[in-house]
Amino acid sequence: MSAAEFVPASSDLEGLRRASRDCRGCHLYEKATQTVFSRGPVTARVAFVGEQPGDVEDRRGEPFVGPAGKLLDRAVADAGLEPSQIYTTNAVKHFKFTEGGGGKRRIHATPDTHEVGACRPWLVAELSLLEPEVVVALGATAAKSLFGPSFRVTKSRGVLLPWPASARDPESFAHDEDGAPSSSFALATIHPSAVLRAQDRDAAYAGLVSDLQVAAKALAG
Image (cartoon, rainbow, N blue to C red):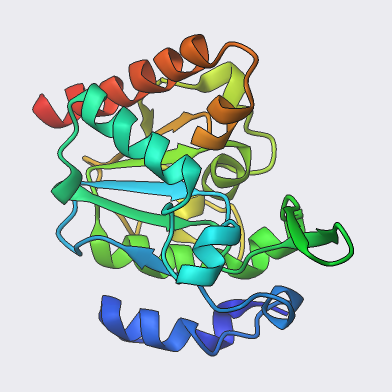
């Protein structure tokens, strides 16, 4: 089971957004309020890929509009990136959660390998249309979706890496010659929600900004 059968064979970005509303590629759609696809222009030079929408995003239908999104907006400004040149999406398009407090609270649950793989065709289709110069993976789930299951953000964060072939192949991590231009790069860093959970938020935030500055320098160069 995968999103592949729901992704239009040929479509523009708005067509992908419309089609994603009816995605039944995995079971997560059953409890989520709606598909949360993306925001930002098709001409964006930078693409941010997060993990999945949170509670606020699920209710509003937009990515990164909750507390983590507000922190990311501040980090983008401090890193010297231009917000109008950023496209924001997630590796998984539906909110995965468990219920707490007698069903009154929805608690974030990390998507598993199957759920990330099932949703990957959407991400591949998005990035193929955008052809961004730099893709920034925010957190472990996004990084593994792009680089493969063995990738560790803690070992490779803040490093400008070649465009991963896995981001061009929705079914596997096999290398091929099609997809993003050879001038594209990828970079992994922590998810902004990790800053909010950190014991030393100032240090965690400074690390996030430092990593994003690597992307800013790549664009400037």
